[in-house]
Image (cartoon, rainbow, N blue to C red):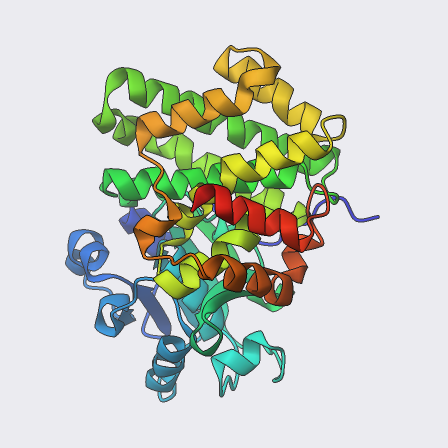
Length: 371
């Protein structure tokens, strides 16, 4: 049985300038990023690379129609490497740009066309959440289905994952919180995954420790303190990416995708909606399995008894940013049934990786509680 796979080589640099020199960036490189990062860190270096900016496509969260447009605009460029610099949306799109002859993003995600990698990929994350720099997964919204879908295949692995803390320091507070909660969810879901093992658990548990310790310090010292510990969060996100890239995630992600797809709620924020309720459900349905390890770990970090860990975790996260009701995003009561069916019909890859099984009524009840 395979225990751990880690394909990208992982690098860390103090500045983007240092990275650009060591990797000898040239006119065969395409940098896909946003204009803020370009103006603040890349422009002055006068690199000879090709550039594409997510701002030019009005990208908030990836969708198949937008990716199709970007692919079309790339067709006549002679590119050997794609360098993704940004958060989850930039990285998810860049993973598709390294594939050959993608005629339809929707058909790609539905696995109706061949998946062939023909370019190198370098990923530089600028948020502390996705861990996507070390996973073989891309997520996008499929407009026609009003949900998000994941494509998991080894062709999507980066060749190099590069951590540069200076690029993440200016991430706005709300975005920092939602993205790092996403990393926390990756770590905690992968810890209870049926595919978790003694190797993946090391990365899951260390990520949880770093993130929750950092949250406690931010609540004590103020929001700006996050900038002083941003490197720790980048590393924790990377650890969580390694963990869930090998062990997978489950119901938190599965239930969040219809909300994100239909109402365009950012990925980390939509995941935050479901974290506590899903893990309360897990704990009630089977408190004697792997979740005991989670409960003990959380109790030690939060300095509370195990029977109140989810209440205390909820308080900690609410101290950082408030959890909304699902209806505050525009969700309607009839969406509860629609979203439940969507999860059952389109997210079996994730439901199969749950800590415990969930039937239709159990999924529906979680939506009802949060509505």
